[in-house]
Amino acid sequence: MEKPRFHWLFFPCLRLTSSFRRCPLSNRSLIIASACVVYLLVVGSQVGYSQQHRDRRIEKEKYRHTRGLYNLDITDSVDLQTGASFVVPTRSNVVYITLKSKRLKPEHIRGTIRPKLRRKVRRNKDETYSAFTQNKLGTLERDAGQTKRKFASNTSRGETRDVYYKSLEIIHTDAQADSHISSIRIYSQTAPPWLSPHDVKDMRFLADANVLRIKEVSRRDSPSLLVFEGETTTNLQHTQRSNVCGGQCGVVSSPVDTTEVFAFHLDRVLGLNRTLPAVSRRFSFLYDGQPCPVVLWDASLYPEGRAAGWSTTRLTWGEYQSALKQRCWHKNINPKPDSGCSTVHHYEWSKLALFDFLLQIHNRLDPSCCGFRPRQEDVCVKHNAECGDQTHIQLANIIHRDHDPRHLVFTNNKGFFDRNEDNLDFRLLEGIKELPEQAVLVLKNKRLREKLLQSLFLDRTYWESQGGRQGIDKLIDVIERRAKVLLTYVNAHGIKIITMNL
Image 1 (cartoon, helix red, strand yellow):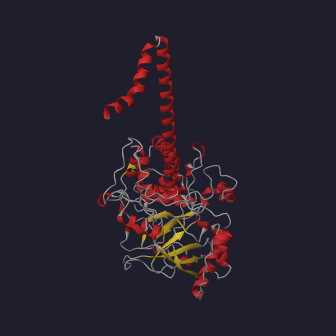
Image 2 (cartoon, helix red, strand yellow):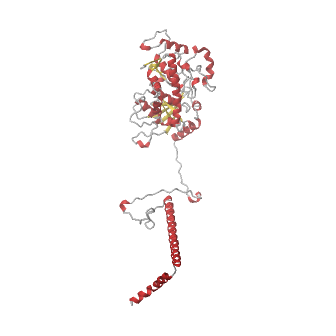
Image 3 (cartoon, rainbow, N blue to C red):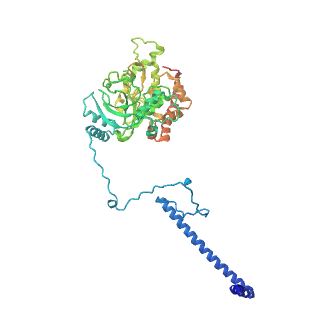
């Protein structure tokens, strides 16, 4: 029974094969070709369908990833590169990745989002005064003169007024290093050797100290100053206190006086050490948050308070030239009573002349702008007519500490970088016969740029406000060109280079 059924099943196949053999060769070739074409069509349709299905699945996975809806789906998971079957991982090696989706803005905000209710906080009297003062300073203090006029309108002449702020520029001084990044950046173990530990400490104070109060301090015949008192954790036993500053303070200058910071670093690189530490800092309540120079307050420069003025040396141009010829206090020899010498040592004038020439600071030795062609907007233009009788021109800003009258302090260092080499003020070098060796060697060995870049890089705010490396390089280019002119002048006039360790 099984044998006949077997023949019955294979009988059609046997008839087809026998008839296929009896067909001509051309017909057999046509049949085989037709079968191949049909087979290729079927295979191609299957491949296209699988590729389309895979593309849809990839797009679906991408959509779920971008929308943050990715999850572990075993049924749809297939290795896209190898086509291998998905293996379910064990609990020990599963890594869950959560992608936060981007929040879409609803079409109708009023109908989809319930507004958050905020309670009004009742402010006390101190907070109200603080907010009022901050608003007043922020709107009116766009330049130094405008700020000082606002203060002067509410105070009498020679008085000081405290403007108290509860929490301005709050700086955490605890051990949490990640809570605050100082604007004074020192990435090595030590600062550059031309900066002393006191310089670094003062720079950090000026840049990072919490502002406790601000005072506008006036003087009889000079513009007033903005002095801020900062919070510090260091010991202030040796700090000289006065009626202006009860602790450690800084003087805030206008944002246009940025040369104060450059002058401080140039002074230290040249080894003169005659300027006060200065940094660039932003105050949210002053000058609309623009970076402005902040100079360390030194109470020893004001022996009787700010109203009495600086400890200055009053000299005319003729007396100054006479003191240079007599070499006053050279080798610690006391000058004669009728010599007309001041209390300043002879070497100090050489350091001042070199420093002022590189920065073209004329407000000390050439306040009437007799040694160059001033611009119409320069303040000294109205005094330029005094150059006919130069002997009686009064020098200005010749300052020393009250307890140290032999050494000068370079303050109000308003330099000019836009003055060309054909309009330099050589009057600053008139009568100078010696220059400090250490400073001249820095100019000669062509390491001025390297040292200035290392030093200025420490002040992050100043570095960024000048345009980074490109802006700083332009300023150094000006100083290097003036240094070449100065060295040529030294060789042409036979100026001696001597050691001046005082």
